[in-house]
Length: 199
Image 1 (cartoon, rainbow, N blue to C red):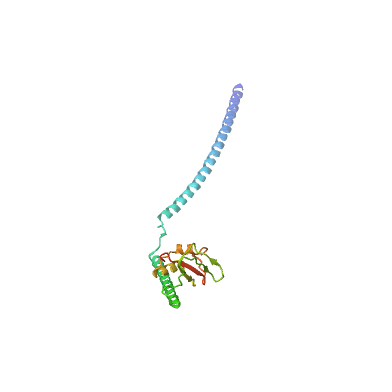
Image 2 (image 1 turned 90 degrees about the horizontal axis):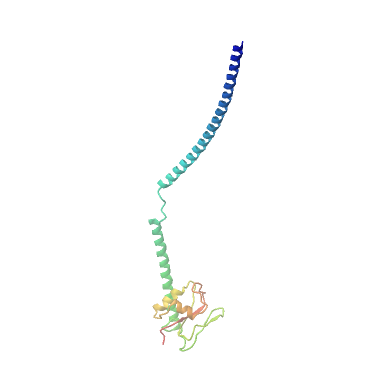
């Protein structure tokens, strides 16, 4: 009887030990399952990141392989630009010829060889606009009065006078006409054209 009770006691102790071991083993298994789940989630996140990087690499590869768009002008663009420049040059030439003809006509109308009345020597001249404003040239000068016409440009007027032998520059005209704006010539306004070579 004692042997049976001892045996039962040993069985109970071993069962308790087995149950204790089973419980510890179960805890370890649960911990391992949690770690495996964490690793699986981390792996999924890494897979998503790798997929996004692969997509970006493919997009960059497509951009690199796409031929660059030319920012230069094509031959047709250059031809069109050349035609526009030629058209502007023709208009400028026509304006120049018109100014020269008008200056010659004014010269013939006044009966003199010059286009405008020469101012008396050693006197200061003034030019009067149609509105009554007066501008005094800088110092005594000799030269001509010119009435601005619609579409006149100061550079073209100076060139027309140079073609007639009056060696004048736009700077000299501006100095002789204080307040004159070369970019905003007023039709009908008289401006003074100095003659630097006049005796």
